[in-house]
Amino acid sequence: MAISEPDIKMLWGRAAGMCSNPQCGRELTALLPGGDGYNVGEMAHVIAKQAGGPRGVPGGGPDTYANLILLCPTCHRMIDKAPADVFPAEMLFQWKEEHEARVQALGADVRFSSKEELWRAISGLLRENHLLWRDLGPRSNAAYANPGSNLYVIWNLRKLDSIVPNNQKIINYIESNKALLSDEELGAYLSFKMHAQAFEAHQYNRTEGYPLFPEEFGRLFSDE
Image (tube, rainbow, N blue to C red):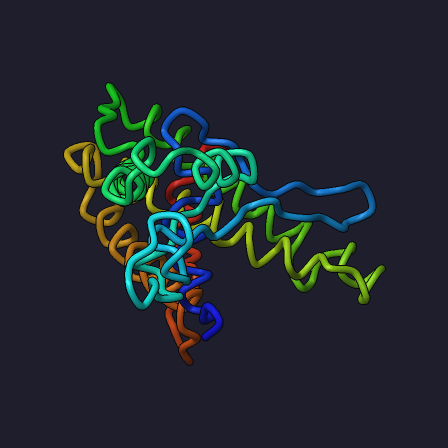
């Protein structure tokens, strides 16, 4: 059975498109001049599909998110070619869990001394998200100029490895610094949080009618 699209997207999104080896952390996508791009990430089985494969068990392991870890080609090859006791399954599962937890917690321990500092941090992340949408999204100039390119592949990956983690970082920043916000700003933030969570869920399993980015949040949380 092939790896399902929701499992692929969940693996990429929760790993933020980086190698899960704590000694590596390599970014696994690249954009080429002209709009094309590629990814080098490999969805490695922790328990091999075949009983005789690396860390194999009778019956083999499943093609599911729970049994996959995102790695760069070098780490994947190193792990699978090493003696069985060097990289046991328990270690790989721990790498995956800890890496995804780090991604989920980005910014949660940051305390800003002023609202202006918080604004600058959030505005920078919103600006990056907007630039990715402008330059890679389905309405970008590059997409219109070269409809046959694989830009949509890079756009789908960037949503998972950049926009989703950026949104989570914004949420973590605000949750840790709520005392700096007015009631109006808290209300706008809650609308953004609903949008961000629904946007992430939409990447894994397409849904209809999820809440769009709230313009009020962009207006209130811009440093321009």
